[in-house]
Image 1 (tube, rainbow, N blue to C red):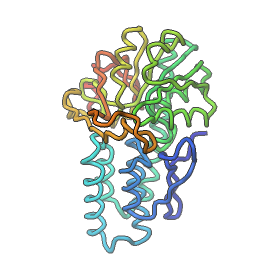
Image 2: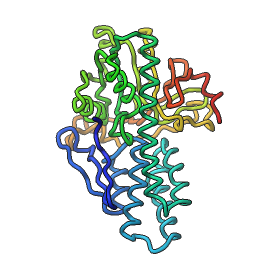
Image 3: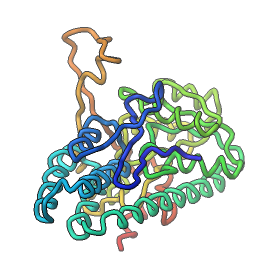
Image 4: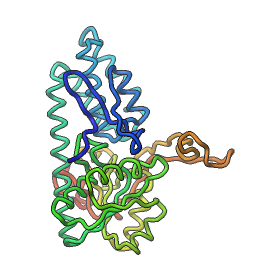
Length: 335
């Protein structure tokens, strides 16, 4: 059973505080719009689908508490907060902007709409998982040792996950031998979050440092890599957590398939290639400090990009709820 990272009932919202994982499994109460967007900004919740859901549920909390006097004030306040605190700060917020559109038009039916969106997200993730598992088994047979990067599970979505959803589907079908997850420096989402989910669900797994990937592929017979994506360009270039690009390069060297798993909505048909994707640079303290304690030499310069782009020619397939596509097939999928 996957984690219940987002809980909403009768106007009350709580989220599993990802900043305290894996040491403490504590839920954070969201009592106002400011609480919700502070949780997003501070990364108590992260992952584009989960951020979208928490952002919308935060508005639902505000509606229940009559935080807004009328529809106009509600819409104005919501748009201002979303634009200021999310969309302008996170290049992967395309899904959030889509959510914003229906918030404005259908705010009176927010809860029922959101419930259907959450259910749809879980259904989408399960389809991604099943399509990905089937494709990997077709290529590799029943003995899959897989590596994943960052966190793409229940903590980043409404449930089940994308790349981790593929792993769950492989496990369910008894096709999975072992999982290796990277620690995902500098924010350690792999060590803190993915490892937590794998242990929680009793999936056989091993944590490795990011710098160990090549050795692990050689020594541990890893035969597949699957990662998520924050944005996929029209040509198949895929942006994901920093470190993904080098995994794609290493996979090509060893001749093992490198897959990207993401909802179809992640594909941006207005973005011709990865060269057009602006990469966010995060606070240098993520690299120079651990737990508030400095570990790097004072005075050293820091470059801390949050994402990188895996070129389409290194990607075996892009796994979506609609099926698995070769990168050069993406441009033909425009509705």
